[in-house]
Length: 253
Ligand code: HPA
Image (cartoon, rainbow, N blue to C red; front, side, top):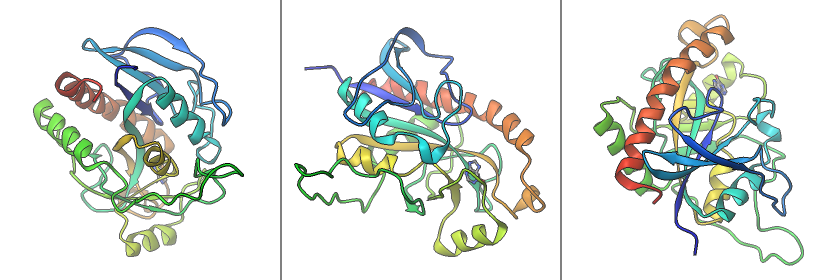
């Protein structure tokens, strides 16, 4: 039996966790090919954590080419049963301005052509997972509780529209996503969440609003990539503080 370990998948702006005391890095072979990089094993406040940079440690893998299956398989194979995903998003709702952190409770999947199930192939039974609540409710609560204890303000819910990318959206596309009920938009939430469910992992996300979505707020006439970098640099620090509060209370489970 392996001990439960918290897995953290870092997105744009989070290719390393500065509060992680690294003990080793290991490439894990999977039946689905290579993960985005070696898994980073370490500790946060004495609790075991495995970190993986979703886009690779040099941030070179575009959202639609991330090998989500290999990433989740590798983490699961190393004993991870709980995953917190850190994801940068564009804010659609008014209260989701640049720098805000949110814990989405729902998602809408607009991606296509991504390998989105482990249950395929001649020897795999057809399997339909329940996905009514794509994020594990109890883990969301733990994250919200950790944020409260850390004194960090987070928006406690949100509907994450997952687009194909890598280009950003048009203003009309953002209007459509809003009509659909989305409050934020990003490119990596799926199939990651569904694959985590297939492996029966606990999974939730901390979304970092990097920018107003296209056509909104100060993105009315375009999205400034320099502004995104500055916002992410500062906000990632607050996400780390929440992760610390989470592991100090719950360890890897
Ligand atoms: N759209 C999609 N993905 C994103 C955005 C956005 O505006 N910002 C950060 N990730």
